[in-house]
Image: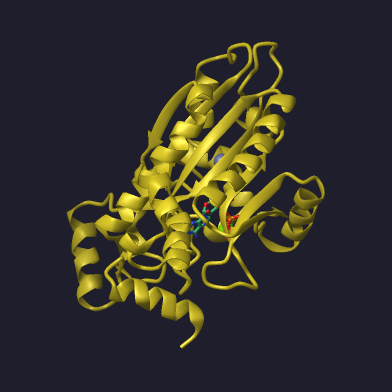
Amino acid sequence: MDAQTSFLDKLFDRGILHSSGVDGLYARSGAFEDVIRRFEDYVLKIGEGETSEAMVFPPGMTMADFETSGYMKNFPQLAGTVHAFCGDNHGHMDLLECMATGKDWTEGQKRTDLALTPAACYPLYPILARRGPLPEGGVTVALQSYCFRHEPSKDPARMQMFRQREYVRVGNADEAIEFRETWKRRGKEIMDALHLPAHVDVANDPFFGRAGKMLGASQREQELKFEMLVAITSSENPTACMSFNYHMDNFGKAWGIARADGEPAHTACVGFGLERITLALFRHHGLEIENWPEAVRATLWG
Ligand code: ATP
Ligand code: ZN
Ligand code: MG
């Protein structure tokens, strides 16, 4: 049994996560969710005075906005779209016939207006764009979303459905970069307060295919993405529990978000992987929350 399987099995044995039979799709226990809630409360307090508003998104976004995001160009391998039965009685008979005979009954499914949200901040941008030019000084939004990525794995930290809590800064280049640097520093302070051994490193997204290699290299070279890495299932390949991203004016241009001066907005986001941070706590402090270090419990439970 490899190390990853055994941590996942321990989580199942303790009822912290519940298996669904599909890798990366798990039910969470009440205790697991309580840690997530406490962590979110803690992080929300830190950014409180600077945030202009808060939003929570459903796990899907419009297909139109999903297309605008460029996700299918960059990460087609991770995407999920929502399809549904839209047929008549005849179509329904065919569907049931396929099911009964073990044939693929999903072939008749049609696209809907929804895609599964791949990154928590995507649904924010079209909302901001529709409001017209940003106020002077831009905005900072606290948000949360379920995300879907088709990356099934035995590694409990690589789920197909998971939540990101984010702060997003929308303004000019200086404001976006300063925000990102501030949160890199705060991210480390948060990990210290949780007694989690962590370090920040430059990173790149898993762009698809041959052209993707170059996009990833260029992202790294421009230092657009950093990750907060914590050993969860492997010490050689620590897991990204937070990420700190500067998107330049890519999203500002894609969705047409204008600043007060009419220029396209620059955006940056800090993403907290809620399940990953919780798993890191269980990994480093043990499966019994009552036995976690007093200081860590005080940070989360006050
Ligand atoms: P990785 O390099 O491990 O695939 P990522 O670069 O895809 O991570 P981001 O796209 O920056 O991660 O997503 C923001 C945060 O969401 C990550 O820092 C991580 O904490 C969390 N996250 C990303 N993918 C997953 C996943 N498959 N399961 C659980 N959490 C995830
Ligand atoms: Zn984001
Ligand atoms: Mg990834």
